Image: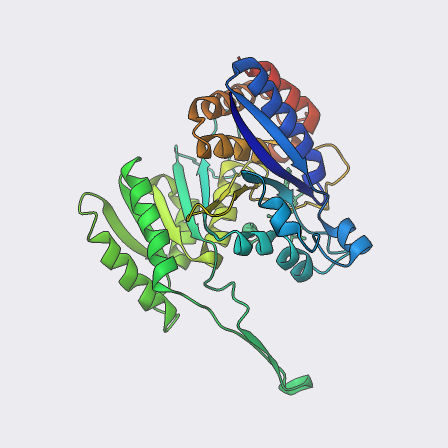
Length: 350
Ligand code: NAD
Ligand code: IPM
Ligand code: MN
C-alpha cells in the first residue's frame, strides 16, 4: 500500500469550501481503487491565522509543511483583512520560494458540455509551463524619493539556470504530446531580459530538432489564445506572462474555477505544491456555488505526480462525465452547488 502524506492548507475564502470536499473525493478514490492511502496534515494558515498570530504561517511553518510528501493548497487572500502583498508573499509565494518550486505547470483544454466564451471554440488542449521563481516576481527594487517625486523600482531577474530549466521542461513535455513548443517573448519591448530569454530558448531548442519551436510576442500570443487556442501545444513563459496567459487559458475553457496547477520542486529536496489557478473569490465565498473542479483537477495532477496516473485518469474521467450530464456550478452556466457537483463526481468514480 502506497502512502502519500499531504500538507493540506485550505487557506482563505472558497479555498475552505473546495479543499475539504476534494479530500472526500480523494478518499473515495483511494477506498474504491485501493493501493494508496492519503494521510492529511492539516494547517490553518491564512489571513485569519495572520490576524491571530501576526504571521501567515507558524515560525517553523516551512519545516512542518516540509514533512509531508506534497502540499495541497486552496487559495490565499482576503484583502479586507490583510493586504494582498503581505498575505501572498507570507504564504503562497513563500512556499513556492522556500520549497524551490521553480516550475508551475498549468493545462487548459475543452470539456464537452462546458460552454466556452469563444464564439467558435475548436478543440484545444494546451499546457503552459510557467517559470515560477524569478522573472518579474522579484524582491529587488524599492521606493525612493517622496510625494510627487516618488519612484517605485522593480527589477526583473532572469537566470540562465532557471530559464533553461523551464525551457527544457517544456521541450521534454512536448515530446510526450504533439511536439510543439511556443515561447512567450517580448524581445521587441523588454530590452535586456527578453532578448536573453530568446537566446536561451534558441539554445535549448537546438537539442530538440524533432520539436517544432517558435516564439511569439506575449501580446500577440494572448490575443491568439482567444482566436486560435487550438494552435498551441506547450507554451513556455516567464513568471508574469505565464500568470496572465493561464488566466486566459482558464477563461477560454469556460471559467477560472476549472483550471488546475502544479508547482513543481525540481531538485527532489522539497515537496511540490498543488493548487488551482483561481484565488479565494471573495465575491462568491459562503454561497456554496464555488466550482470545485479546479481543485479536483489539481488533485489529479497530484496523483500523476506521485505515479498514480491511472487513478488520476479515473478522476478526470468522472469530471468529464459529470460535465456531459450538465451538472455544473453557475460560473459555467449550471445551477448545481459545489456539494452537488462533488457528489456527482464521487458517484461517477467507478
Ligand atoms: P479570483 O480567482 O479569486 O476571482 C476572480 C473571479 O473568478 C471572481 O469573480 C470569482 O468569483 C471567480 N472564481 C474564482 N474561482 C472560482 C471558482 N472556483 N468557482 C467559481 N468562480 C470562481 O481572483 P481575484 O478576485 O483577483 O483575487 C481574489 C483574492 O485571491 C485576492 O486576494 C488574490 O490576491 C487572491 N489570489 C490567490 C491565488 C492563489 O492563492 N493561488 C490566486 C489568485 C488570486
Ligand atoms: C497565481 C496567482 C498568484 C501569482 C498571486 C496570487 C500571487 O495569481 O497563482 O496565479 O501571481 O502567481
Ligand atoms: Mn494568477
